[in-house]
Image (cartoon, rainbow, N blue to C red):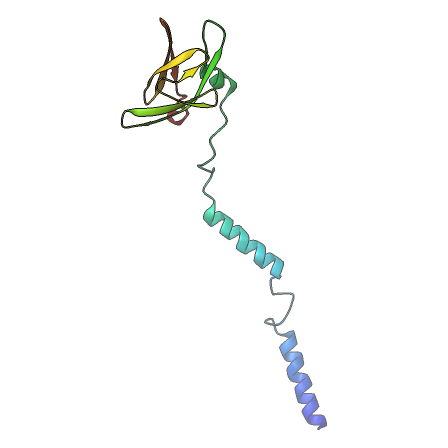
Length: 133
């Protein structure tokens, strides 16, 4: 019985001191998790988010805003255009052909501009070309 206990103790001491079971040589779980997450981040790092557009410079915002003779500002935000028909967002309002804004009538909506008219006065608003830069 004593001999059997000595054999078991010897086997246990050999197993516990071997490099496989030694805590000194094994990487910690924290390091393993961090390495895994860093590798995963490198594999999926695509750069900037394509759905977030860069903020326009203050000069660009002024270029897209036009004032009429009465000093009223018109800011064209977007044009929705398909099959010769369209709608425009001017001063945060959705407008279609014939609608009025600040006394001016929407005379024409094209794919890249909107033409407003008040009597003989004509004003042309263009869409900001942020995608072309």
